Image (cartoon, rainbow, N blue to C red; front, top):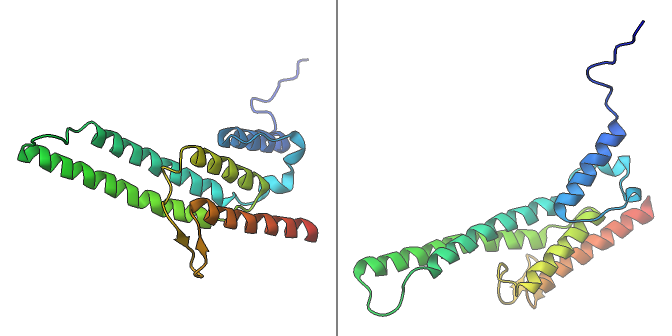
Length: 175
């Protein structure tokens, strides 16, 4: 007598949770050890910083495309009316792409990571932006909703990340 194996074996939820977390960590560029992935953490709500960074990345790509289009346009010497109109149209396109990018940057600076992994991801992304001379960030001094002044985007974002780390630390103490 032979025993038939079921077509769909039972789901190992712990393994599935591990694979889901490992795939998410790999996609975000964060390296995790097996010890850092716990069932409690896997069930937690997603860290909002990941969505804020993804939105900023997508808008940065759109802005870069607009800048590339503009860069290919002849805008020197004697221009025809049609060429002048095209230059103006491309300038408007770059401006239109820059405004949502700046709004996404501000949203990202104000989004407190809720997990250790989110904080690490934010710091890695900040480092990338810093190395690119902040070309996708807001230029000049910033002020938050409470009137607090910051030197630049790095200072503003570091303030948010510092507050998030202190809250994570408070949460660990209370646990």
